[in-house]
Amino acid sequence: MKALLSQAAGGPETLVLADRPVPTAGRGELLVKVLVCAINYPDVLIIEDKYQFKPERPFAPGSEICAEVAAVGEGVEGWAPGDRLIAVTGHGGLSDYMLLPAAKAFALPHGRDPMEGAALLMTYATTIHALVDRGALAAGETLLVLGAAGGVGLAAIEIGKAMGARVVAAVSSEEKAQAARDAGADDVLIYGRAPFDKAQSKALAQAFKDKVGPDGAHMIYDPVGGDYCDPALRAIAWEGRYLVVGFPAGIPHLPLNLTLLKSCDVRGVFWGGFAARYPDRNRAHVAQLFRWWEDGKIRPRIDRSWPLERAGEAIAWLSDRKAVGKVVVDLRPGA
Image (cartoon, rainbow, N blue to C red; front, side, top):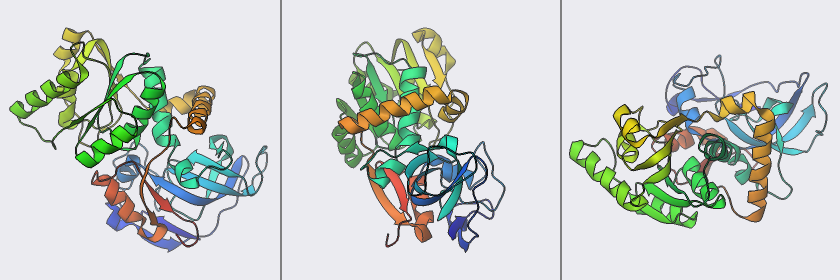
């Protein structure tokens, strides 16, 4: 089988396409043939040794897949060869075949596109956990979404609307603004590229305030970080909730005096830890996502796809923050 391997720490240009033996499913495992692998920001970090988990090299990155069962290991029930599934893998998805603990797999709903399936779990499961468990978003509240045209940003718009919130989307271009509108955002703000000086930061804070309204944003969903954090926090409502999701723009220095003045909460969102500790609650969230998917309330947007041999380009595209929606690698024949 073919696999795109990280053999040394570095950027996507360091990845090497290589032949590897097809593994054998052990107890509790499924051997799966990967159909589509979605690329997420952890894939950018993991090959640079900047992620919290560091697999032993060589390894294939690729943290989210839609796949077909090729073989079933001992003790596994409910799965048969040919069944299609989606799963978050941590790594390993950029290979023709991989081993997957059966407990991590979710059956792909019948008739669903494998590309959309591969792009569902990481962003939408993170977001439903964030808005429901960490933020307790209520109908009628105002939700400000930063980086709103990325995978988690678009998921936050759609889930926020499904939960009855007013959603204000913040993005960096008119193209991304249109994607946010298409996802259902009630209002859109186009901001500039960081870094910001003091005057620019102050102007952005005022722009956020103007968009969210005089009461402020009851919840801020921040998968961006960096210089966007301070201006957004200044637009939060009294007793608002600021959800920390990721840091592609850098880890911000939070002005804690603002949390005192607004009596607001800053809450971390680590979906992987939640799913590991509370698998039943996570499965209930995924079941809700499937219902919304079936009803047309959510739908993963695919920005573009690459074949396996060019998957490094997909990682670079995401790293450069060019994606509008999700980036995927299509491993099916003829892709």
